Length: 585
Image (cartoon, helix red, strand yellow):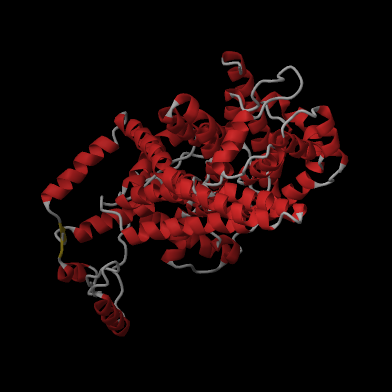
């Protein structure tokens, strides 16, 4: 690529133009000198030449403001009144709403007569201005431009584009599973070794031994074992973003969103929601229309954030992979990430078409060039997400794990062990120890609470242990992994790291009722649990951020109740349907 800096500087009214690369550290000194020179000469960019109808609309607005308020506004302030849907200028001017709205509507009609959508006119005029300014300034090799156009014809194809997008996502999750197996095994071995060292040294204090091994190391360790999968997932996401593909994905998704009243601008917040809903909610501020912004913020929590990933990974690794193979394991993982999107789109349709009545919004986005991702940027993104993941394990997960452990340990009735031994005196010491631990958990506060609430979740196929995990996960959904690690390490004598936890879950069976003797984690229950977590609003900070971004708790509470009810209904339907089609053995 070649850039004629002298020609570009002349077209910009003599403003200095220098070449620099922050990545390579080149041209930094030239930038400093150019800034100093520009400050001395005080040169300004040539003013924008607006099309006649737009210029007339701006002039009309300036006249109307002066007539109604007696104040004079600049052309730049008139532009904000004309092009922005939530400008704060009228409030500062004290411009009465009854006079303001008809004046702005009339001005926007003038813009439409020039062939522009008022909400898209400003960037389109600027893009045209930039195109003319860069004519003959930037030259690229025709081969590279031709290859970029050829790739875009394939990736942005109306039919092949979405298929390729789905294939890329499927390949990404398959790679995440395959590559993460080795570091996950190392973390698991480390947790085993640590428990083997710490456990025997605390034999004299059984309660402290249980707290450290089953509560702290077991619960938090079961959560941290998924760190490699989180890192590898964001490695691929970083590669796709930095290569320029994610901008193309926004155009692909624009076609999907258009029928439900949103556009490609909503894709960026929703894409951010796949990492964490909070930055996704904050990024909705870039959407000009307040109604479209509200609708987008309402559906962002449906995106399967990284906090849901450990739940999917645990269920897929424990049940889907061993039963149906790695291909179905990856397919189910991709499907779970799509579940939220499948319900978010019709939810957005109802909001935009029936409740908020959002007008169609144009979508303008400059496609970046394809380029090789920068390792430093990708690694920094991985580090940020890993740090957030680990910080949750050290704060929220740690605190809730302690609470879950205490509820599963107390009250400690000494007679439980005697009753277990009396029921089967011939059983081996190992079997008696496991049965005793299970009996302790069942008569604990957590066991009693889970059994009391479990009937509400019985249509979803959840037993009392799963019910406790679900309820404990409402402050932060990742907690279910550590909660299951605590309950199954204490209740079944299994270690709470990933491998032993998976085996303990596979061995768990219903002890009473019409399903007695059948696996608790049947295919229907596994899918229902994943669907419940895919749809339920189980994140306190997300609810608080939604309240902040929507201007009150009404929409935040409505979102929480709607998503929770929807999650229960869909999970119950999935369990009942799958149980009839594939009854547990």
